[in-house]
Image (cartoon, rainbow, N blue to C red):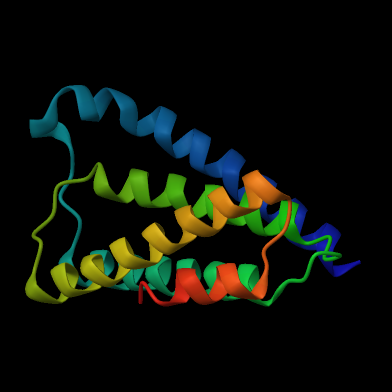
Length: 137
């Protein structure tokens, strides 16, 4: 089943991220040892994260009250947030392109937080609540 593959992929990626965090932790304590990300690598990774956060937002907006994908979508959003946190821990030059992408990402994260709070309080997202969240775009 495709949903099982998604869950397994997210879980595997989470495990690999834990290993990377563990390996990078000593370097974070001594910031002079922390490597600087190549600007192109940082841009590609950051752009990919931004795109995936928008995908998660879209999936949350498309699901209906009977949709069983909420857990999968939530786990994907958590993994993306952990990847973002990992990325932000590295030194790198914040170019104008990265700053523009971060502005868009901030708005997306805010809307995701709104939708998540709506889901927590009601158990599902209504059309009105989706419309309100989208108005923040």
